[in-house]
Image (tube, rainbow, N blue to C red; front, top):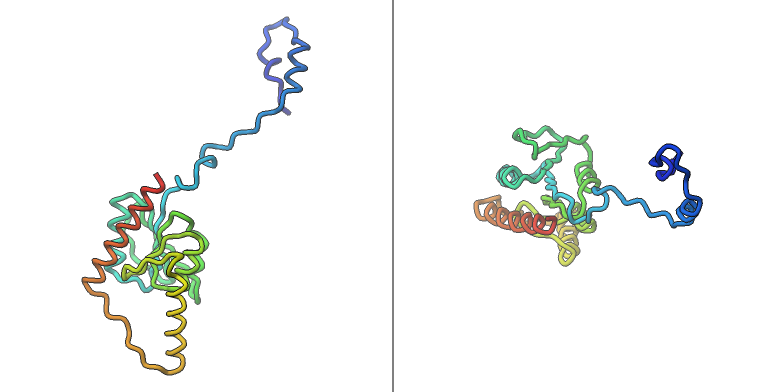
Length: 198
């Protein structure tokens, strides 16, 4: 039960002023201020990095690890098999159960706006873009609302052609050029997010 603060701070023998008590009782109550953490603008939420790690090249993982530790940005590697991650308060590994799209579901459930995700899974990228998560592929391709529909349509077409028995040339191996391309795009995207969340 709430107590009247004016009564609690009266000196002994002092009577409460009826007029003041009536005025206080008629005064509109002030809305409670939310805790500082809840009142912060969403943009101030720390950026996090999410890595679809099952098929992520080792070179890409190394780039992410170095950047996360250097810039003090939490990075979570999600896979359905054990994965070594160096010991750091900014690095973590989540092993999910085996099954189709289990890794995807975990990342979608946890990633939010102002986060950065690394995946070569176009359907996962589409789900993340819809949640306003920044997405790049291990090859340095950036996905956003302007290009994800085209990328998804092309991916679906290629899958349909393969199902029909078409022999399609695969992507070239992950070479030094693609490594630099990813590093440059990752650095640019991460620094942009960090500037926006300061």
